[in-house]
Length: 288
Image (cartoon, helix red, strand yellow):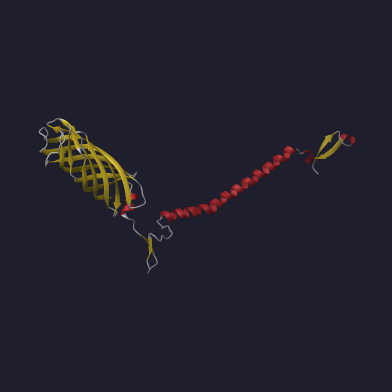
């Protein structure tokens, strides 16, 4: 038995005490920690060996399979995939033009549109007189861009014309059988927001500003009035919907509030308002 000899203990001042009797609590904790550390190191080494032997070859083989062009099998999709009845092979349906356009990296899509409809011209008041108009014609053509965030911007040319129905003089009575017309040609820069939906109908709202050429010809009016010929600032508000009929074509219908600065009626030098309301329908073509 291993022991230690200490003086003054036992017979003759000498004795033998086993060495493990000298172990303190701290010594026992030290040896316990050493043992646990060895166990953890052994487990880590085993894990590294397992990874080196099994995991790395598997991952390398998978990467090689992808690198050499080996096709990756995908689950059958009953909506887009078809099966050849003779060979049993699975074929995926080709993407539509809309899908390709949505996946394209371009930030916008070009479109053109044209339409026409009905125009209602508000009463025009100036210098105490008032002109009322028949329902008229409105036409419009535009080219624009559709951005990915549902916004659009376009340049538009629109034209509307209304014939005079009757004229009320400053004195009160209406003139007999007045003739004449009021027309506006405008060049507008418009912005739109297309409201997202999961259907083929997509409502939108928008507005625009631009430049308008206003022409008016009045006959059998008052002695002071001949007509209008002026270029003025114009603005408009728009609300409507697109109705998709194919990947490239869609129909649209919209309401348009259009107004300009007051126009000068000559030779009286009187300012008259110019406001109209249009209902339009047309065709839109998207370039993908």
